[in-house]
Image (tube, rainbow, N blue to C red; front, side, top):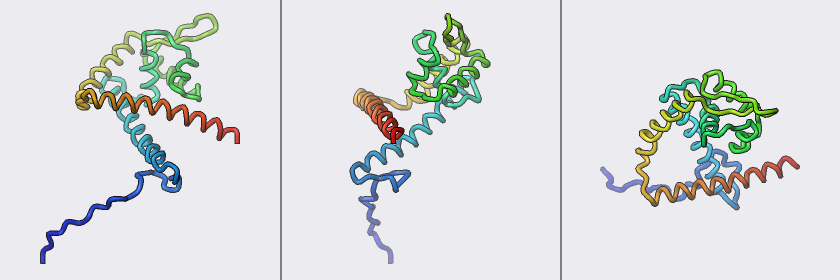
Length: 178
């Protein structure tokens, strides 16, 4: 005998999280956010590496790619401390290692200004970043097919991420004092 009854969809499966043992009764949403951040962060890292490889620079780490983008930003020389500060990277040796790697590839150059060393993208580096931009437009932005409402939502999400970044930084300082 054939049944036409459809199985019932589970309506309350609980939050989608990676660490159920951390879910708080006060904010299950924070655990959902953290899981989403982990997944989105890994997808973003995979994306920037593949996009830069398509632009012609292979074997870079996600940090290498974002450091190159930041060094190229606004065509101004940057100090290591400034790069780390803007990117909120505490371990300066990681950024320094990326800068050395990018210098070896000829996409970043350093210059000594008094006691300080500054970094800037080379013409070759800027060309790779421009090609990255073209690929990003073609593969990501065009696929996004964003309208004004979606762009406003993305802008609000970016604002919320900056706010939560500050909250996590403050919580890290509190935890370090325990």
